[in-house]
Every structure is written in structure tokens, then in C-alpha cells.
Image (tube, rainbow, N blue to C red; front, side, top):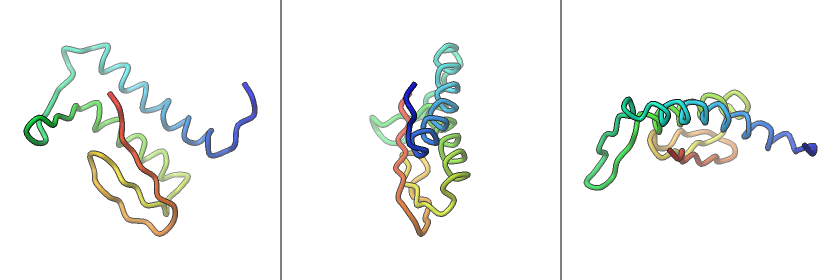
Length: 88
């Protein structure tokens, strides 16, 4: 693997951690719980868990960032903006 910029390594670490949850949840599809946010708009527990992992991991490296997330909304900070939209 080529040397990558540190920011890529940080985001890759976060995505790999969240990906483990998604893979596990979809491997046990009978346990995958789906909730309705609005009419025709659904969220899974996997969405919520993976978003939480992404936020926690990235906040370690970017504690002052503003996070705009699909499930949690906006988490105000005073530095860069990070957008999180977990895919399950």
C-alpha cells in the first residue's frame, strides 16, 4: 500500500471500525431492526451504531470540528466541517 496522507488514515480507521458493525448486523439480518423516521424514511440500528462509531473515532482526532450527521443532526464545533452519512 502506498503512503497515504494522515487524514486518509484517520478516516479509513473510522470507516473500518464502523464497517465491522455493519457487516455483523447484516450477517445477522434477522436481528437488523428498522425504524421509521418519517413516511417512507427508515433508519436501521446499524445506521445509528455506525454513525456513533464514526463520530466517536473522528472526535478523538478532530475534537473541535462541526459534525453534520444524518441521524444525530448537527454537532457544533469551531473548526472544519465533517459530514457523516453512514450507509448500510
